[in-house]
Length: 496
Image (cartoon, rainbow, N blue to C red; front, side):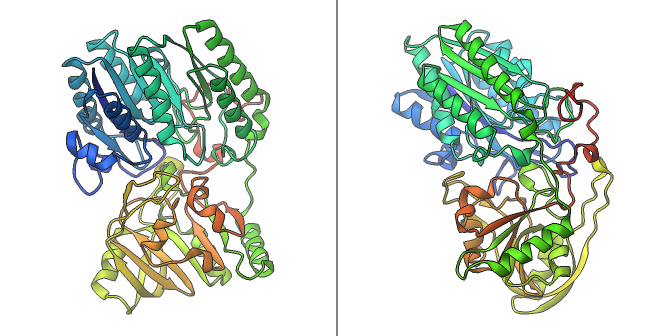
């Protein structure tokens, strides 16, 4: 048995000014790994491709990995980066294989294609019309017909924060291997609803997504090979952004259709619960102070979420609105993770640890997609630490995977330890803090540029959470985003 295993993952925020060249799909190199290097990078990790590798080895299969690329969310993928990865995958399939296992995202937009994953699958089908294709997808997939029509098996994450990525790879891979062994006949159905759930209301710990994902697990317990509800990624101005569902059954296409329709109707009936109500920033700051002043000793920090500027949704990670509000409010005994500003890091490296420096921090990137100019802030602080910014996630999210913040500095500004980084990394793991010598559980406040993923590795440390409406391309204000290409009517933009 010969398998082609590949990874090509990117969630595209079409409003983001952050470019997405090929190097963004690699860690510390110019190109993503392939072959033995890809196995070394992902074997034993909590990734879907790690699960594929494990399944292939356990089955005694011969397998090849033509590319394993994964990039933090940002603007549309450069065409040359897309062609580099796709051409390698298609060439490997064209050489002959029994099945293809793909670790994709499901919300990739390129400079030329609204549906990057669908374009990949169409090209695979052009050289291998009947080869079984198993696909692991992120819960934030924006499902296009080209994905549903060309894949044999689709499995999506059932948790947000995404702590079941490895398990999703197992679900997709096992269904394909069962098919090759003659033990299953996958029959798949998919569909969409005209709704754009706000990301801040998509957490699988919260209703209504908790019930939707629980129903998916029930369907699998009742015999479905895979059942998935994709809440979609709304910060992309494309036709089919939004919620969808996919069910794969063993030989029963009618049952797959009935269960898919059930999940879609369940989501539609609770659409109002997916609408996020935004709180103004001054109210959030006052509430944070009140929570901190009344919390018991040793109960953990009040977490302030700068959710409009989260790099895991394509944010620049350099807006200073929320950090500036903390400084203006005089909040101390705090940490902020993180501000993306490579130039500021280089200034601090040149100055040295222990020295005091005044510099222009953040706000280097304009955001023309939402009509905002970058607004830096001049700060004075003491350089507390410099490091290379590399760490491996402890888990449960992305367990064992390498993160690279690039050259990193910690600057203490008026009682706030500000982590300043050179590569985009979202704080979703305690290792992000231990790598820079910060113990977040001992602080009064922790500001995180995150939406939901921080819950995976840090929520258990917190006393309370305050969601702070700053500025950035991850905004939950659909009016600010100006969605023009998305199909209409669509809820909640339209009253349907």
